[in-house]
Length: 116
Length: 116
Image 1 (cartoon, each protein chain N blue to C red):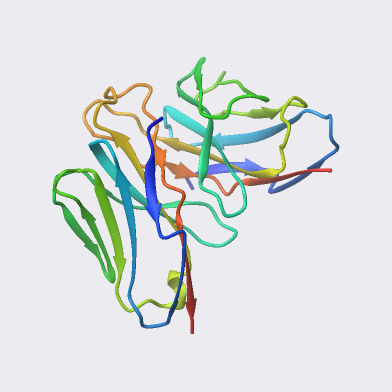
Image 2: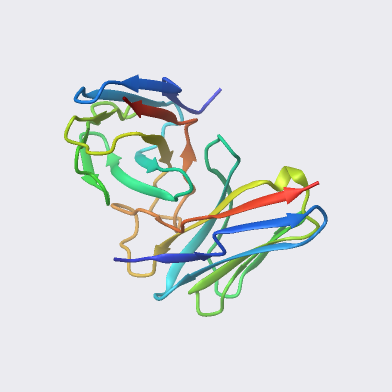
């Protein structure tokens, strides 16, 4: 079935280093969302990208949606210990019907560890 | 305060017993979802409901059942037919709209089920 591949699965960085996680799909996506799950917590919505080539920033976080709407990335500049957690991408494929019966396709997540 | 509540936070059951996990939301959201998360894994969709009195199977529905008799409630029953029920269960909801591409999902705090 439909899949969204997310890499890497794990990454440990030194505090202050940058971090990037990537999501890739073999089919065109209508949108992509990013969520963060802290250890022991639940996923929390970060952002949604809809337009081809879209770039959005939230402080040290930069989100990109590819021109072909088949891939996306989340980049964190100068990581802090508060960035620790698992980052998930989730998307709807282009062919999904609008409104009813929509469900997200989730990547497996990238777990980020930050050494102080 | 608006939000999603799940109870209990931790649940222990003996093998062979059915158990029902509670999910309540006061966000007035139409759509509700149940996910299962295993250690180091992503989110796998069990069941979802777009409207009261209607629900659809997700990717791993076998051994689970749901009901949606009220808009604000979407309980999940883990039956004895579920072969490996020990996991972290997350409930989510979202607004549905024909005018937007896809609204984000809001998650409850989760229930950690351990079957002994």
